[in-house]
Structures are given as C-alpha cells and as structure tokens.
Amino acid sequence: MSNLSKMTQLLSQHYCPLDVLAYELNTTPTAILMDVQKLKRYGIPIEYHEEKGFHLAEPMGLLDNRELKRLIKSKSVRLELLEAIDSTNDYLKSLYHSEKMTFCVAELQTGGKGRMGKSWHSAFGKDLTLSFLKNFKKGVSQLSGLSMVVSLAVCKAIEDNYNLPKPLTLKWPNDILCQNKKLGGVLIEIQADKDNSAEVIVGIGLNVNSTHDTAGLIDQPWTSLALLNQRNNDRNLLCAAIINTLVQAMERFEAEGFSSFVDEWKAKDALFNQDIELTSDHKCFEGKALGVNENGQLILQLPDQTYHCFSSGNTSLAKSQENLEIA
Ligand code: BTN
Image (cartoon, rainbow, N blue to C red; front, side, top):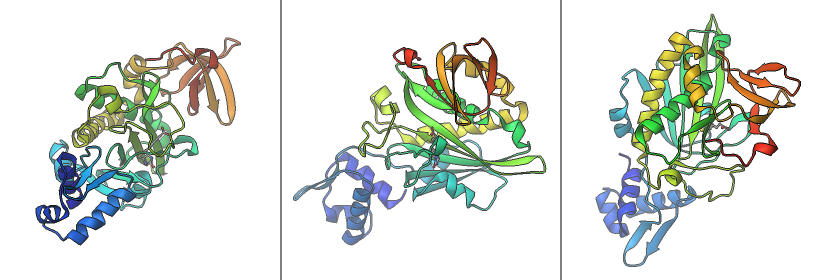
C-alpha cells in the first residue's frame, strides 16, 4: 500500500496530528505536508484543526496494487496502477505491446477522453477510470459490437455485486445508464490492424463514489454507484470484479463474436421500441429503435417505414419521449 493510500485511510477514520502521521507512515513531516498539498491539488477537501491535526472531510479509499492483484483471478493479465495520468487510453498506446491483456487504472485523469471528441471528468480517488489493451486474432471488421460487449460486462460486474434500486440499462452504442442517467461510458480505439489481427484499446469511465459534480464540468444527467446504493463503495472490489468479468467476456467475444451477446443486449436495451434521434456521420435521423442485429448495428425504422442499420453514432430519446423513463 502506498503512503498516500495509508494516509487517506487514516485521515478517513479520524483527525491525525502531523507528527503522528509521520510516525505512523514512517516518514518525515515535510513528506506528509507535500502529500497533503498533493491531495489538495487533486481537489480533495482536507480539514485542519490546530490541536487534532488533519482529517478528510469525506472518506476515501484509494486503489491498492496488491489488493487488486489478489482479487484478479486471471494470472495472465498485466496491471498498471497509476496515481495520475492524462488518459489511461493514451498511456496504453505508449506501452510496449504486450501479448498479455494489459489493464491500466488511474486514480486521476487530467485529460480524460469521452466519445465524439468530448472530455471525460472524474474525481481523484472516487470514481473508476481504467483501460485495457488486447490483441485480437481478428480483423477490424470482425470486432463490431466489441464496445457493447464491454458495457454489458461492466453492467454484469456491478449487478452481480451490488443491490441497486433499478436495473442498469444500455443506450446504444455503449452508455451505461440507471434511471435515464449516465453511470458510465466506454471509449474504444483501434491501435493497429494488420495480418488479420487488431490491437485494441478500450477505456471505461464509471462514476463510483462521486456524489456531486464539484468542478461543474459534467454536461448531461449523471448518477453514480454511491448515489444509487447510498454507500461509499470499495473500489478495489469493484475494479477487480470488472476486470474479472471483462477477461471472461473478451474470451467469449473472441470465440463467438457479438452474435452470442444479442439476447443479453436486448435485455438491457434502453432504446428498444422508443422514438429516438440518431446522429451519424454528421447527419441526423429520427425514427423508432428496433434493437440491434448480430453485428451490433442499431436498427432504425424511419418515418417512411424503411429500415436502416447503423454502425456508429450518438443516440438520444426523441424530444417527445424525453420525460419517459427508460429503465
Ligand atoms: C463516453 O464518452 O461515454 C466514453 C467515456 C470513456 C472514459 C474512459 S475513462 C478511462 C479511459 N481513458 C480515457 O481518456 N477515456 C476512457
């Protein structure tokens, strides 16, 4: 466990004077003060009382390399845990290309990327931002539906381990929702494609213990696991559960493709039979969403009763449907 992790653990429980912190962590008061400054820079509210010392205004448990490795079942994955990085997707792009499925998890992203050129914001020590890099023995054309399988796996990991007031749903292509509000998202980037194999980087952003948008940067209705289950959730358990479920899902996807996930998608499809708006290739379409085909393409029935399949795009409920609950 890193010193920063031990410090946040102690300060989540009670006030701690500087000299006691330094003694407990076997370091100097100067080093402690530097970590306090670092936490402040990361936006963590730290209280200070002249006699009692420092205290975290909100409890926080940091991710722990050893604990994660203990909880991850597959011994053939690599894991990199970082304190802060611009984007875990970009970090994996710069790595030596490993045959092993490689995960990168960061406590903070300073330049997190969302789909469609948007930014992804998450709070230090509260949410989950992780990416994995995997080589597929398939060409890009056989990878359709991959990001949808990833969001299905994330839903499964959450629902298998937590009691939620309502089921999670998925908004094509891969937004994870609860009660119409975004809980998480997936960003897929193809790194290389040659000799009928592809190296893919998939990033997952999940709102876990954030309960307010402190920086005021989120531009859409959102929720978090903590807002849903009223708990401060153990992120090591959740992160490992997601990694374990993803490893299995990727093996199955590699063997069977998206077609074997179509029924699971149907059970979670937030848009099925709804009037929606779809933006694809800078064009806007309105129609009824009729699920997905075995390549993961969205089937849209246009007002002229013709059917069209889309491989990429952005979806939202049509204005007239906005107040309907899609959970
Ligand atoms: C979306 O827009 O819904 C996709 C969000 C994906 C965010 C994740 S966080 C980890 C990884 N690194 C990034 O920079 N983005 C993805």
